[in-house]
Image: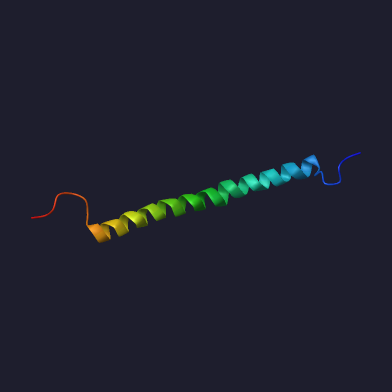
Length: 58
């Protein structure tokens, strides 16, 4: 007798494929965009406060 909480193999596989597509198409690109954007913003703010890198102009 099977466990009533057990999900059939076909439903589990379908769910795993949907989760994989969600991760690859939406989540990873969004996280990448946010990380790169956050790093760029941090560098921009640092240079706005401290000044650009290099020797002081004279």
